[in-house]
Amino acid sequence: GSLPDRRNDDLYRDYIDDRNAKSQDTLYCTSNGVPYPHPYESQRAGENGPLLLQDFHLVDLLSHFDRERIPERVVHAKGSGAHGYYRTTESLEDLCLADIFKAGKSCPITIRFSTVGGESGSHDCARDPRGFAVKFRTDEGNWDMVANNTPVFFLRDPAKFPHFIHTQKRHPATNLSGSDDSTMFWDYLSQNPESIHQVMVLMGDRGIPDGYRFMHGYSGHTFKLVNKKGDWQGTEFITQADSASKSPDHSQKDLYYAIERGDFPGWDVADLWEKEKINVFDLTHVWPQKQFPLRKVGEFFLNENVQNYFVEIEQATFNPSHMVPGIEPSSDPVLQSRLFSYPDTHRHRVGKNYQQLPVNAPKVPYRMANFQRAGNMAFYNQGARPNYLSSIEPISFRNRSVNLNKTHGHFIGEAITFLSEIRPEDFRFPRELWERVFEDGAKERFIGNVSGHMANCSDKEIIKRQIGIFREVSEDLASRLEKATGVKGYPGISGLRFNGTHNGMAKDKSLRAAN
Ligand code: HEM
Image (cartoon, rainbow, N blue to C red; front, top):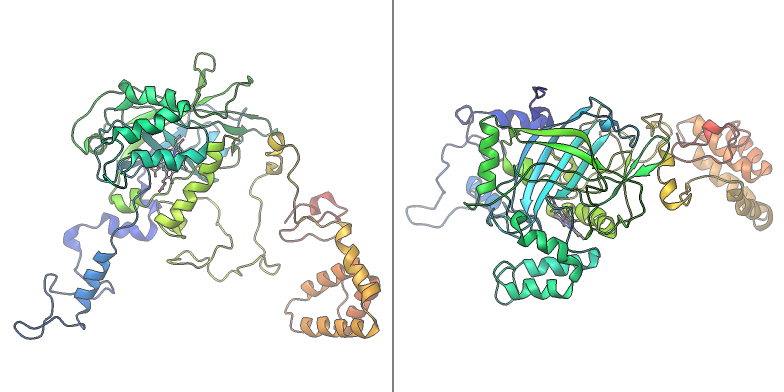
């Protein structure tokens, strides 16, 4: 079928005007927006005197230049990317409740391909695995598939990863990288035999793909797909062929100009699934495709080059822990450690508010809210809404009828309980405090303290609820507070719904869930 005729401009909100502006429509300014007619001139005292500190244009120019670089990715630093579309061609609803896997669903995507070991200016045709990272902007938030072009990896214990990568990077003394320093390279591999499958792929014909358009992508790990019933299965992804090389930016050129001439690269998305008992949590092993056939789910295309590589690709943050309901991590230790490592490096590499950048921000059909506020460069700071779970301005927690609480059950038993659930025993020790520890004077002062403080509370409902809670501790305590505040409280908490807290003492089941 035809590609959706949509550009990704809507991803860029405020950036959009600049993204599409023609250079002749622009005006040279200092960073505070003041037009400046001398882009090439510094102010100096007299003919041959020193420069002037008052020359904001020069200070502005140099100081920004001094700070132009952000850290490159610690691995996968050399990359290329583009925007496009994913669509589900065959429903996966029997296996997975993710909304994006319903037949006909589609979403905008951004992809970044990369080599692994080299620095940001290194050769595209290095013998190296290739990264294949996809950001799916689904209606339920962003799902990132941070994959490689090979189904296996060098290790199954994540504690080895920094050691292994250091042997690919520059040696402290020779300053030569693993591709030149073959001692380092083989020293590691010869001590870590589980790398052998990946080494054979690397040293074989597939070790240097001809650009990024002709290679497969594999998520590598087993993930859990959870269906509505809470059952789960594993996945994998695939397509197309590969070969050899040329210029240092061979893959970048190939991808960019293919998209420019309308030769949009595309991939099938497939899910590999089977229930058999093999160790699917070992990343150095494969699931043989003959035994575990692929099942096509959908396809994606890259139909739009980026306008600005730094904004749309370098600052893009792909993260295996970005999952949507229905897709969950397995216990693969390498995956588990990646769930931590990526957002950790993103906070360092891009900054703590990296999720607010246009390329990373979710594009969801609801107004997203949470309590992550402020920090450097916060520009989506969520307006005037209170920055705690307020009962006066509550936010909702549920968007779908699916019981998402069920999903973890099959994996770790029923070990997950809600720490916030209120139970009768929560009131036992407060009751002892009131009945046995506080003597009469202490009780009086307590009532005075609480009622005095509550006098400034702007919402009567809050007082009624709080007295209901005190009543679970002691009827005596609650009625004394009622007298002191002049507010009749709730008879207890069994009829209350709390904002964010599970009321395990509610009689009505629907009140037990949070919000
Ligand atoms: C990039 C860590 C294994 C695929 C990265 C980055 C880190 C990292 C820190 C830089 C991310 C950034 O700056 O945005 C790790 C660790 C691993 C591991 C600790 C194992 C213990 C893997 C595996 C795969 C993979 C097994 C593939 C199946 C990628 C890709 C990128 C990447 C594709 C580049 C993402 C992009 O284009 O922005 N990794 N990685 N990594 N990793 Fe891994």
